Image 1 (cartoon, one colour):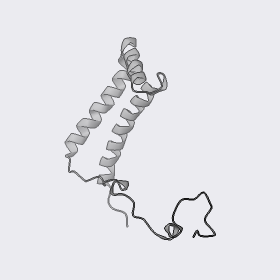
Image 2 (spheres, helix red, strand yellow):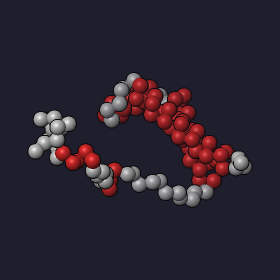
Image 3 (cartoon, helix red, strand yellow):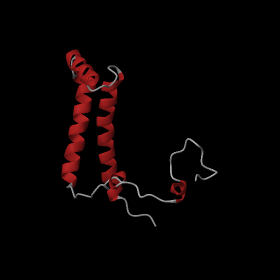
Length: 110
């Protein structure tokens, strides 16, 4: 016997609507774990990221830019905006790390 509120094409059992089903174990991402890293290492990474981004944007010759466009295309990125997005991600990564360092130095707010 079917539930009157259930449509004729709905193949679910009538009582399924009322039962909670746990999502699969892989539905919840594993939280990031905190790993202690020295401030010197973070500053070194920031410096390296900033230098790479600056070099590619300002000093690399046209063949390097062409190689970057080709790389972007092989990655499935747009050949014109992909390299810019890649360089932006390097700059934003450095900025984010720098922000972590300044946030660590601020006193906790009450």
